[in-house]
Image (cartoon, rainbow, N blue to C red; front, side):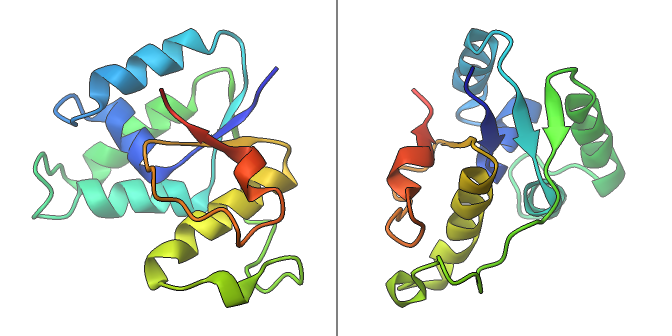
Length: 142
């Protein structure tokens, strides 16, 4: 059984029918069978922040986004991962953080690794060297 922590873009693709990866996200999600999957505070907050932003292509009011997110999180195979790790943990290779754009990915990789999960993402630019075993827990969605 493979457990997946979904990143922000993956969750947005699942709840937004106009997202460029909507169909791809649903195909992958359906193919997972009975494997557990997770969200966490950063992912949930990021989804609400992005989709409710007026410049988002398919913007929706925050309460609507939160209702969609709640519906998705009610899925029986979902479990919520609390923020239980820190970028300040000694195992993080902070010297390898080269850009602010790597911070959230590094945190999510670290959280996934700490819970024996894979970080499911469409992003092909995730830098894995900041987290021990980062390359082993990154799951590019096919």
